[in-house]
Length: 272
Ligand code: KIV
Image (cartoon, rainbow, N blue to C red; front, side, top):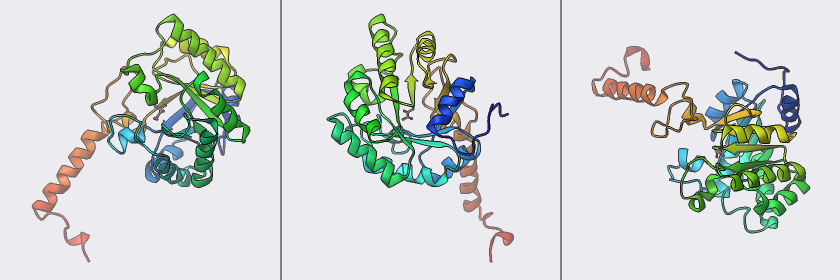
């Protein structure tokens, strides 16, 4: 069921700001390859995030840190070929923007030029101010990401809820304001108290997209493999699974194995 307030043939960063102004919630979902992105785009998801969660979901790493810029560009270009309506946002991976703002801009330019994506996303606040400023200065739309920022997992030491304490909450609020002022077109808030996320969403004019940040924000993002139940060992409270694809796929593949072993496949109609 669609409750879109306005039809968008192509979602742009401007459309997202308009959606916030119109009180229309923004849907965002990850994709890392052409086939999945085609389905996600056809279902009218507003923003496709080529997340560095590809490092976990696709490559099987424990964290998002190992994925490289070249690998992100490969995933992003596959998604861009599929996305006819959605805005495609690509994570700049760990190690490609933190050292200095010139490197950050070079990485962002590579993503935009080589994949054809529409925007980039970076994790962090005041620490990466110069990089955000320089990328936006070059005309590249930037989305921020605050709260639980997985690229800093070894600093946090755990994936638990962030900004429960006043000092961290205060910094997060200041960082959100700063990112807005620098010209970011939106911010992802990950795993923070719902009340704080709502306060941030009400304090800025750009869209706030939550993951584990409650319902008082301007939109939601999930990892598509989690939503479809393809992953089954990851069970955070914020995750709503819409299918148990892990089970469905396992059953289908087991059936195929059985059919091959029993010589049932291929049958008369399935051969030349
Ligand atoms: O990489 C990713 O998938 C993300 C989302 C969890 C927001 O950054």
